[in-house]
Structure formats: structure tokens, C-alpha cells
Image (cartoon, rainbow over all chains, first blue to last red):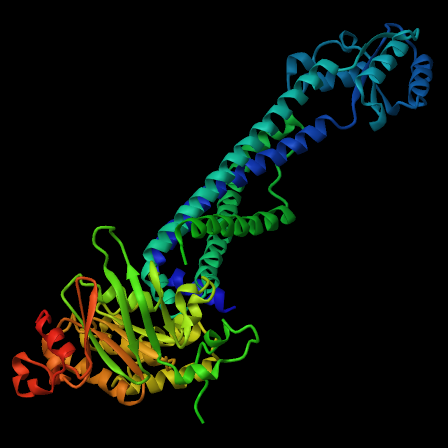
Length: 287
Length: 278
């Protein structure tokens, strides 16, 4: 406790330096938190899009209701299929047209009747999907099958690249944050060199001299992390309204960092601060 | 019953059995044996210095600027290390101390500097208490000891003041209080009056005299002749050209302005006075 109170005394005595330092660290950690937020949302999006794989079965013209029911029942009983839903031409038109009045006024016969299949999680690999599609195509009331493999593959690739870019950016920012804390503590060390000199003179052990600087680094990192998260929350909730408009097209609503992740981030900030401080103390404080 | 000295561990550091070496109490407090210190190979600062300081002595160390007075003191509190020879403090060779043991040595030595070395944004109390806090003393004892130390230096009731608001003389008194608060075996003063006007300088010297009268060994480095004349009875060590010359009987016993006492001066004393940079 004494170490913390000595660290706080050091912070109080150099308030201006500390405010600038916390702001700088907060800025670096804001970038880190933002990249974590992007990575989290990309991960969520990836899970959504990579979740239950879809397959659309286009029915042959002239298939009657009995044939459609029989086909839907047959498809629904396959082990690879989780759910099979019949979509009539009228429903297809409504889905495609949306708010488009011209499209909505077109004849329903122009739109194909389909059976939408949601595949079981275990059947999501490409080989099984292609095998299933080949078998389904042979059925007499089926005209074609769309597996969406090309689109989802490309999307997964884009999402994966985005996630990797966010992670790489995060690592770079992390290193920058350590450097910022280290330099900040170095400044603090220089500002308090007289204090260090006096402590040495009166017989303070190296541990006694160093410990408040480590605590100060941890406080700096932790404080910067709290500030960064608060800033990110403000920015996130300000722009979420705009992002919500996109949520319909991307199939998910952006989410903020979870509470456990926030706690880990603040603790990580404190750890990062202590690490940066330890580096500075090791290099610049000879006791 | 005497209070335990802070840093009594220092005595235990070098005994394999972990017990305090009582025989050290009867040995000279400080012995320099053939000490050599070199910063530049062609101009050693100290050349085979031999010196013995007994417990309870007041010793002036004088010499021209750059003669090695500060270096001599730095060697004693291990801010510098000897290149040759040994320094025995309470019977222990401090040149052989491990880095971990140096803080324990320093808790047994009070040091006062020309520039006070106070933390301006700390209170007077905090500046003095730090010497006890580093030794892990309980705060109740720290409070009482700091109060006593401040009273001894004439700053009773000033504990709450910031060091930065004090005058030069008061700041030096705080520095002296910090040096004596843990009742060290020896107090080293490195030009403690260098930043003070003549009246305050004599005032601070008087403070060291009082500390000495209370039984503390004092090594006082100065080149201020006025101070040497003020306390001519004290032993005088002159450092010049890296060597020491002693006047054991002090300035009182030797030549120059003290011609009346010249007949009492021994040969060493006469040589010392002749070389005084005064």
C-alpha cells in the first residue's frame, strides 16, 4: 500500500506531466481498443456468415403442390439438412422486390419457387455441400441448386484478411503503447532524479527506489486504458446509429466490447504500463 | 537504554554467524589504508592516503578546490569505489561491499551537502522522515524521531512547511536533521556552508559542533578559512595534490595567524599549515 501511496504522491507532484502522459497512453490504447473492437465485430460477422450454410433448390416449372411437399419432406429428412422451407413464387417476389413498386407489381410467375435449405453445422465443408448439391440436382422436380460457395468463400477470405489486419495493427499499437509508457516513465524519472538521488543517499534499497515507478507505470497504463475505453464507448455509441443502417445488409448489429474483454483491457493496460515502466527503470535508473 | 541504531544490519552483513561484531565498538570508526583513486591516469585524485578517524572525533578536511575532498567523502559513503587500498568503516572493508549491502552502509552514515539535496515539493517533515522510512521504521517512531531531530536543529514546529519556502540556512538545517535523524555512526559534511553567507555558515558550523558534542563523529570538508579559525581545536586534514597532511592538534596549534601557538605545533602540523590553501 505504501508503494501505491508513494506512486500517487509522485503523480500528484507532477500532475501536468502525468495528465499529458495519461492522455498519450490513452490515445495509443484507444487505437488498440478500436482495433480490438473491429476484430471482435469481424469475428462476429464471420461467425454469422460462416454459420448455418444455406442452399437454394430451384423447383422445375409445373411442379404441383404434392410434388413440392414430397420434395420438401425428402430434403428435410436428409442428415445434412437442418431445415427445409418452401418459398412460393409470391414470397420470392416479395423478398426480391422489397420496397421496389415496379418489381412488386410484376407477375409472380416470373419468380421461381424454391426450397431453402439450412444445412447442419457438421455438413458445412465444401466437399459435402457439393456432394449434396449433385444428389439434389438429380431429383425430378429440381431444376437447379445454388450452394453460394463462391460468395461465402470470398466473404470469408475478406473477413479473415480484415481480422488479420486488425490483429497486426493491434500488435503494432501495443508495442507503441509500451514505448509511450516507457518514455513517459523515463520523463518522470528525470523529473524526479533529485528524489532518487536522495533516496539512494539515505540508504534506500534498489527495490524501494524502483517500486513506486513500477506502480506509477501500472497506474498510468490502467488510467490510460480506462480513458481509452470511455472514449471508444463515446465514439462507438455516437456512430452506431449510422452503422445500424448497414446492419440490415450485413446481417448483424455492431456490438461493443464485452465486459470481460473490457476488464481484461484495463488490467492489460496496467500490465502494459508496468512493463513499459520496468523497461525504463531497468535502462535509466541505476541504483 | 540506548535506542537501536538503524542499519545495525550493516554490522551483521559480514559475519558468517550473523551476530553483531561487538569488537568493532573499540576500533577506529574509519580507517583509510593506502587508498588510491584515479579518474585520469596522469593525475590521481588520491595517492595512497592513510588516515584513521576515532569515534567521537571532529575532523576538518580542507584543501583547494578539486583537491579531492569530496572524492574522499564519496569513497566513504560508497558513491565511488577505491582503485587501490581499503577503507574500513566500523572494522568492515566497504570496498568489498556487495551492491545489496551499500544501502545498509548508508543508513549508518549521515551526509550533508553544499546544495542541501532536499526535495523542494516535500514538506520539511517528509524530507527528514525519508531517512527512517527507507529503513522500514514504524510511522509512530518516525514522527517522534523527526520531531526530535527538527528540535535539535532549531526547526521545531516547521514540519508542515514545504522545503522550497525555507531560507538557505533553514534548508541546510533540514539537511542536517535528515543526516542525524537515524543517529548515524558518522556524519559527513561536504562543503555544507558553501551556499550560505558568513553568518549562516558559522551558524551551521555551530550546529555541527552541537552534534559532535552529543557524541557523533563528524568529518567536515570545507575550504572556508573562517570556519577553521572558528573551531581551531579540531583535527585538520589537508588534501593537496592527492596526498593528505594532518594537523592533529588543529589550526590552533600551528603557524600563520596563530603564531602565538606556533611553538606547540609539531612538524606535521607546521607542514600542514604551510600548505593550507587559505
